[in-house]
Structure formats: C-alpha cells, structure tokens
Image 1 (spheres, one colour):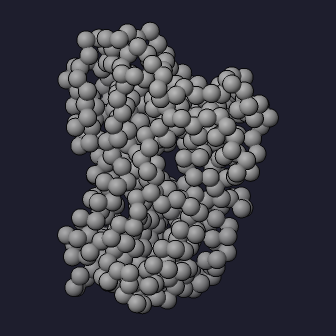
Image 2 (cartoon, rainbow, N blue to C red; image 1 turned 180 degrees about the vertical axis):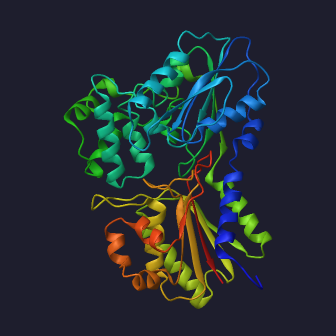
Length: 423
C-alpha cells in the first residue's frame, strides 16, 4: 500500500471482480442441460436476463426460441430470444404484456420439450400478472406498498407470489409436461431459488396465510380487492411436491457469496487482507450502516476484532422504510450516509457500497463512496448529513460531494457489495 494508493480505484476493482464472478458467459456453461428430442423454449426475467439470454445463445448447440423480460435500458443483442423491456421497481403495461408472452410460450408443450428458465433479481416487478379479478393497478399498488414497508425481500416476495398467475412456480406448472431447468442468479439473502424474482419456475411452501402475516406484521395497507383475493383459496400457490414439478431441475449459478469471495481475492492480491462478515445481511439500511461503522471504528481505534489494514466485506439486501416521500437514493447510498455519520473524524476509514446490477434505487447510480471526512465536507458545503439521511436524500449528499458511483447496468444482479477499508 506504499506510494499513491487510490481508494476509489481499489473499491472499483472489488466491484468489477464481484460482477465478473456472476458473468453469465462464465457461470451458465457449467449448468447447461442436455438437448431435448423436441423444442427448446427459453423464458426468463430479471435485470440481467437479457445478458443471460445472449450468453445462452453463444453456448447452446442447437435451435432456441423464447423471450425474456428485463428492465428498460438493460437489453442486450440476441438473435433467437426476444428481449422485452419493462418497468422496475414498479410494474407497467409492458411488463404485463411480457408476462403474457412467457405464459403463451410454454403453452401446449410435450414431454419431449425443454424449457430453460433464466431468472435473476428484479423479475418480481418485471412480471406483473394479476390473479383473479385483480388489475394491473392493484399489482402496482402492492409493489409500491411493499417497497415502502421496510419488509425484507423474502417477505415481499411471499406476498407478490400470492397475487400472481405467473409467480410461485406457476410458470413452470403451465409448461408441464415439458421439463423445466431453472438457471438462477440469486440476489436473495440465503440464496433460496424459490424467492428469486418470486420464483416463477420454483415453488415453495409459503401459503397465503404467510402472505397475510407479512401484511399484518409490517402494517402494509393494500387495496380491498387484494385483501379479498389473499383471503380466498384462489390465492393458493402450487406446492413443490406436486407432480408437475417432479422432473424439473434448479441450479443457482451465481450468488453474493461467490462474488464476495472474488472481491476478497482481489483485495488480497493488492496486499490488503479481507474478511467477509456475511453474504446475507438484511435490516434497515441506516441501522446496518451504523453497525458497520461501529465495527470499523473498533478496528481503527483498537485493532480488533480484525487487525488493520483490512477490508471488511458484506453482502445481502438491506431495506429502506420511507418515513418521508420524495427522497432520492437507494439502500446502498442510505447505508453509506449512515456509516459516514458513524465514522466521522476517525482517520483511516473509507467505504463503498453498491448494487451489483448497476442501479441503486431510483437514480442512475449503483452506490457511492465515503470516508471519515464525508460529513465534514457536507458541512463545508452547507449541508447537514443527519437532515439528508432523515429525508432519504443520500443521493443528494453524495452528488454534492461528487462521490456517486455510476457504472451503468452490469448485466447481472447478486445483490449488494459493501466494502470498508481500514488502514
């Protein structure tokens, strides 16, 4: 670390390694199924689904057809697989048409046919398919309420899959008797494939009562029509032991754990030991930021529980409960602003947090950079870090400091990467 050590470059290198570890061109090839006697249909959804589709086309030895749904601006060039772009994190009519397209693609298949499902984070919003008498407006209201609730992603997806005709394994059930092989990039803490994008091809044992319990626990206000649907047997999702899933296969091809290990190796190569706290952290972003700040202070001041120099890594997906409307920024920037407040004035601490899909929240940044001087620099600019945090305007804070991280869409999504360097 002697000489000119650029901390931002160091953090960018960690991020690049984490993203590369989830590159579908590398991860897909180890999980390709055998060619079927019949047709091969590709379906998929998520913020990296188009890149997965392009990679599959490169790797597959045989004819392909199908479609995947991704976020606006996240498309990729494909030859055989249609790429449909739709809205995220709040669904729109394009997503509704995309969901209908996927369901149509799997109609009328036989046991000689194969369905390859390419699934990664973001598909819950990208595949609106309201069940029963529900409308797209109802599903939009569900998503907006869930996003503001502070519920963890696993709880949100439990609700989502019970108001849908495509989530909760229903897309795979519709493909029966064709064999379905799901290739999944996990953005879910714990890597449960049934929770990624609310499991369109992977059922689980969550019930509509579980969904109602989530709504009650987090005091989520939903339209009357949604509550009526969730209270009826029509909301029941198929279970994993049903016959229509018996011949299917599920593979998690990339995850936060593998990406964190890749980032740790890059740090080690740079002469900085790395420790991984967890790949599945959840909780309020500002509270998680405060805990990380306390650990960093302890290392900086007491040389424990880790000896410096060290980079402290963690992954997972925090949440932001909106106490005020109109804020700018996502969970990573909010985490980082809270951390900046906790490390103010403690020399030798710098930090980085970003979403591996390239977008954090509603703005164009994936995350940001911070260090022990960030709060003082905001003060010098006439800004109050605590007020910005209370207003959920972490984007405004880091934009004022010119410390936003804007890599653009990465083509994958294995949740968040947080790195704290103590020297």
